[in-house]
Figure: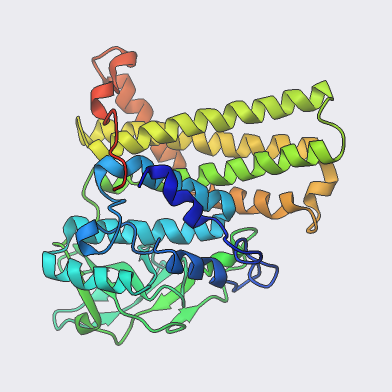
Amino acid sequence: MSPSSLLPLARSPAPGDGLCDAAEDAHGGFPIRAIARLRRTGLLAAPLPEALGGRGLCEPGRVDALRALLTEVGRDDLAVGRLYEGHVNALALVLRYADAAIAGRLARDAAEGHLFGVWNTEPAEGGLVLDGAGGLRGAKSYASGAGFVTRPLVTARLADGRRLMLVMRLEPGARADLSAWRAHGMRASATGTVDFSGLSLRDGEAVGAPDDYGRQPFFFAGAWRFLAVQLGGIEAVIETHRAHLAATGRAEDPHQQVRFGQAMVAAETSRLLVARAARIAAAEAGSPERVIAYVNLARAAVEQAGLDVIALAQRSVGLAGFLESHPLERLMRDLATYLRQPAPDFALTGMAAHALAAGEPLHDLWSDAMAPAAPEAIG
């Protein structure tokens, strides 16, 4: 199976089975049908190795297929893309750090259709703690898929300050509070706070050793996955921008062509940077700092491209694009919200500091040897 052959599985096979409808695109909403489609087509198990019932999408040689799939899902719906990226991230961490028995049990859960996610953010007070007796107290905040993710990977602080990864087994709807998620966009991501107090290690699986979660370059370089999803959102805005110009008979206007051309340059630049960032991150060649620096370079470029594409579409479409009845309205607010990732200035200045301190010529910082030249097809 070639990498591109996975993409039709991510698309809607029937009317009404794709994008969130108005009821789902609401505060407290969730893309139930779209996630059911990913489950039905086997894409929830696809990150697993073939030996565990998957398609090996987390293997380094198959990074192009995973990147293309994340972009495809994000192009269809950014809220679904955010949830699927979290699912992939959780399984990638399990496959990388869990022992074989634990990985096997969690792989069976994924194959059975459980939705995974990564919940690391905590409220200012009341973060998740694991006591010496194996009991949990505290919460995670900004947890996407709260109430719907039944296998969240969380980090719990130990007495010595280190953090241990746990994959908890939750029942649908359990322990989730979505009342504070009143965001401009990404409403259907069901983002909220989940309280784990009263649960224990017996209610989940410990993954890896303490502080494995933050090991580099995997931790920071993994940002390429959400960049791939964001790229899909950028492409969706541009497609809608183009459709509007065609429908209104304005595609021949040279001013409109300039704006659309600028949007195309931004999108294609992002596509090339994300593709290279994914390969560099997967190969993990060179120093961790150098791998991370390139992913951060791509991160800065994609964020600016997304903001530029939104502004260009708004100027071309005008007030109509701000009406809820226009398809551009939701696409723009979802993308604007999803572009707000943690510490963008830290990522940009870290990349710049690395390049400034390097002894090599700038054109040699990220050589072709850092990334696989010809990823394997999916068999």
